[in-house]
Amino acid sequence: MNMKNKSIDYSLQNHCPKDSLITKNVICSKTVQKIAETQRFVGFGGGTEDINIDVTVHKNRIASNIVVIKDKIVNIGVVPVTVIIRSGTGSITFEDIISFQEETECPGVCPEDTVTETPLQVEAVIAQPIRLDGFVGATAFQIIIKVILRTTITATRPVIKSRDGCLIDLNKDLCKTQLPPTIQPPTIPGSAAGFPTVLSAKNAILLTGNESLNSPISGNNKIIKNPTISKNDTN
Image 1 (spheres, rainbow, N blue to C red):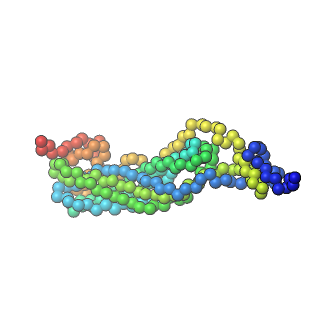
Image 2 (cartoon, one colour; image 1 turned 90 degrees about the horizontal axis):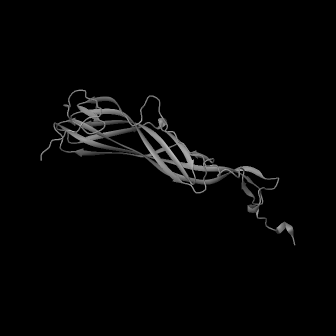
């Protein structure tokens, strides 16, 4: 028998030939979308019918962290934005930090594998106002803001590879260690995630917590913290 033509099943061995090289094996590589979403409530002085919303995404301040669990990559991040809302009776400008969390299926990936991500690209920004009826002396809107991001996630693992087809993991126990993964949300200095900072306001109020328009809206109103509901009860 000609031994040179005999195929060797390296899956049953724990080593490759001496002329093998250490290289990286791609476990998965996917282009994925991430959606950062938030909602805010604003109130304007009486007589407001329509509003215009401008959202500026601060791309250079987008931050994210990654954690790998068995067969899955979890990514969380924050997107800083500046929002300007204008109406015929007033305007309000505020900064906000919008968070996102996405999971990407990656069969075979383990917590000790290396995951890289291309810079996040902004695909679209959606700002949808929903008018809320029934408030006293003012017009209120629910503002839904979405930022759609795109990136490519790649998971790799060091392997030993030879010219004749041998391919084994450099660390055979890589996927046996299952420590509880921990992921820390990224933070941006000088900002508080989940709480907007009002820069300017004229005849407008940014509401946090429950909707409320108890206070009259006039002049340089800015923000009401933890307000109470005050609607016109017609029943």
